[in-house]
Image (tube, rainbow, N blue to C red; front, side, top):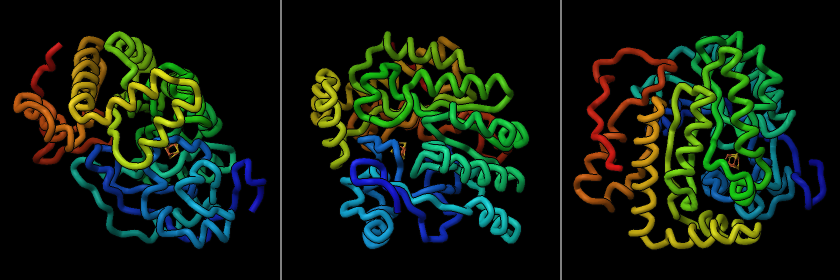
Length: 349
Ligand code: SF4
């Protein structure tokens, strides 16, 4: 273990997890995930990871390795790296005979969705070997990071992987102060987009996840954000509004307040009223669809199941059609009997 209690404590993850099946196929992201670490340096306040069994069921390991008393409360303050993961994965893939390929997950492997695989240089070194192992075995690999600029150090690996790799980033909002309030240690949105732009210029496929857009953003803000994203020419733009659920939401509101982002804190607070939340969420989904159509951007909306239960019959049909359709992304695409895209009703302005 290293580092005092005020900084990020680091160690090695003694568990030997390599490749796990994932439920993220429901979002058209992947069928498997590989995580290069336990814990994440970025410490985003809304992050769902600290409330998952991966953290909740391992208090002894966290205490022993990095002196963590409460894995949820101390999220962002510890990282356990999975050293040698790329080499283990390479051996595992040599032996693995079956491969899961759902219609929505397309057999893709996500790297990493429970940490940021380029949060720092040490994670980046593990990620480099992981991406090389996966794509060397011709597995489609989706890399998600808030630090694509750091990932550029591995551009050679991404270029070699050709059609087998895509790299994306979360761009919830373009206002660096608001984003900085609730994603305190992650690079600013413009920095993330510049990294993706560079990958794109070098022929590497990219994607953007507008997740989650903030209630402070109006239609004009979303248009500016989408126009900037369009300049980066991603293969798909996923979008979802925030859902005010659980203890993480409390922490998000508090973090905005602590950072002096009063308007963001107040607007988030208002979303506890389910009618207000439904109005904000359907507006954002509608605007992103409409502006995306106008800009010719390949959009894919992720409407929440709870939202669909809460809106009018007409809106239910519209939102459900997004849950039923295939993502427009060509990455890892294959023809299956059910892969036709259903009709999407037009969004009202
Ligand atoms: S970068 Fe991702 S995994 Fe890391 S804290 Fe933020 S949301 Fe969680």
